[in-house]
Length: 392
Image (cartoon, rainbow, N blue to C red; front, side):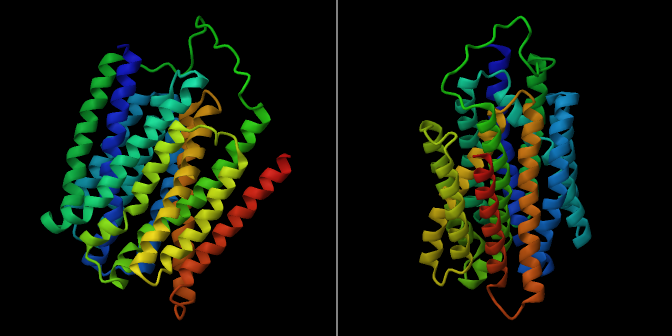
């Protein structure tokens, strides 16, 4: 096994650990803020918007830093910041202290995701990019779904301290693995050596103009997907209260879309006919708008479960498109990864902010937040159609 293969395999392990730790902390932070400081939907949405705002700029810079300083140093800096924020959060008792600790964790996390995305796809020929991106997506999605599914149970068994303690242990393990990777390669080559022979041209690849169009559409669609995701996550405590679910039961029921997204990733990994096909991206965006509104306005728990199935499929295809087109579209993979993650941060910020504003100015309408964000998603769908028509 070559050094690059060892690094790639270890990167997948670190990625899975990172996904579990960050989901356990950030997704259940809203339950923690509700229980400890009385946060309702509006304040949780504002917190989500703040973290998304931080994430947008930190992720963009994280990808650029990784490209300039190297992957290993960037990973170590990111994990060190995450560790500092988690340790602080486990000891602080004030609301401002918890928010500041969450910001530190978010900034550190932003240095890790673009770097890991670049590590697993570095030096891959175009024909190999779909395979490694597929493994990458399945790895983080498995850990994500498991963390969301069992997070409520862990809180019931061990208390809210577990959302700090477990990630601290995981981040320490990630640091050890990062130093181990560095022992096997002092640096990662950001492009193929000039002595390497170029791969033969693939007649089935899209034209550069078509590839650029799909990259632009995916970078537009992905933040809107995360507008929906983070609005949903921030309001899960409210949905749980609506149906009288404990954090444990909410973790079981409201994590269904995560498992559906995982299944979607597996299908898209093995079936590649969706690559550079507009109808699949457009159908996913339309499904996103409808399923999001259905989840937040579900009159019964059965409707909630059914809507999550369509939501998971839509989210899966949109996210997969963004990452695949980012990694397939050039050699500056960490910078493209940073833009991909910054788009996620933009969605993390805008969606919850719109939802909070609707609850503030239209409190007499119970579903005002859901309607406002759904209208925003429709605007995004219009933008997608505009890009496609203009390109043609």
